[in-house]
Length: 140
Ligand code: IDP
Ligand code: MG
Image 1 (tube, rainbow, N blue to C red):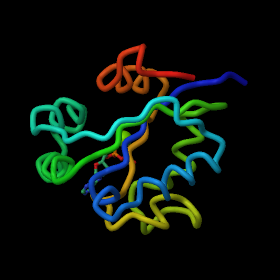
Image 2: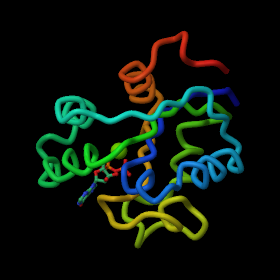
Image 3: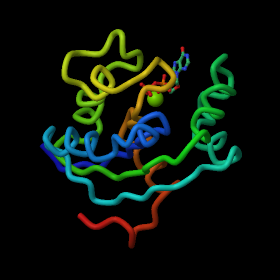
Image 4: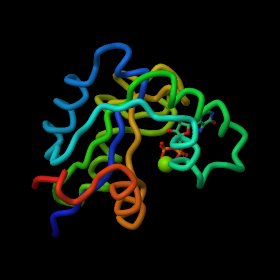
């Protein structure tokens, strides 16, 4: 068992509905600690760079448009097995398939506007954290 960090985004559908605090409470109740956090507005180029792995997917353009439709909250989360733990707390990509009590089941509007992003591996977590934060901004 090791303490791990993962990267999280509270997406524009959630900031629009004033759900930052409600989502943070679910993350904290789930055993994760928010060790860095900032609210920002992505540019189109930044959204395309962040979601570069999905650029061949049919939903890529819509996804980037959605991610720049309002402010996001970028976060670093820390805890035991934080990458997998956060994915459990988030729930499945499509809220229709998400387990009861997960963030996406409770709050997501659609498969696209699904309220949160979470890294899918420790390797991607490190890349995504470095995209948004410098070391001095992360306080464990
Ligand atoms: P994840 O966020 O659960 O890891 P990914 O497959 O990595 O899911 O997809 C990234 C994001 O792209 C999703 O969170 C969602 O916002 C969007 N997305 C995924 N699949 C679809 C789709 O079929 N239609 C529209 N948007 C999608
Ligand atoms: Mg993903």
